[in-house]
Image 1: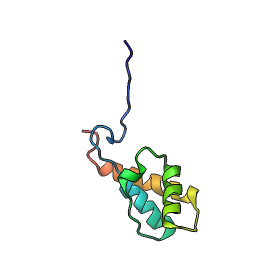
Image 2: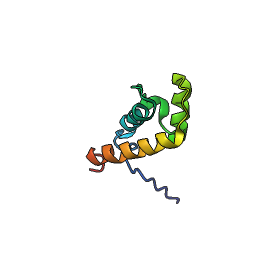
Image 3: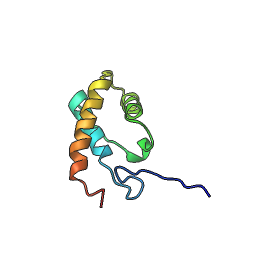
Image 4: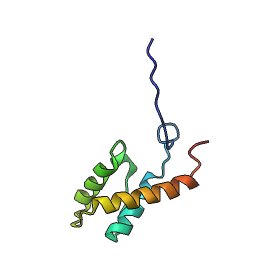
Length: 88
C-alpha cells in the first residue's frame, strides 16, 4: 500500500481560500499602478512567475518588473495570509 502526503500550506486544497488573488492584485497595483481583476480560476496551479507573465500578456502591460512584482506579491501575501483564518 502506498501513502500520498499533501501539504496544504495556505488552505487552498482543503478550504478553497487563499490570500493569493488579493496579494496578486495588490502587487500589480503597487508595481504597475493599475487596479486589475484577478480571476482565481485562471491562475490555480500556476507559479507566481507564471501568474505575472500570464497577466502581463493578458492585460498588455509593457512594464516587465518581475523581480519587483514578486517582492510586492510576497510582502502582500504574508500580510494578508496572517489575517486569514486558513489554518483552523
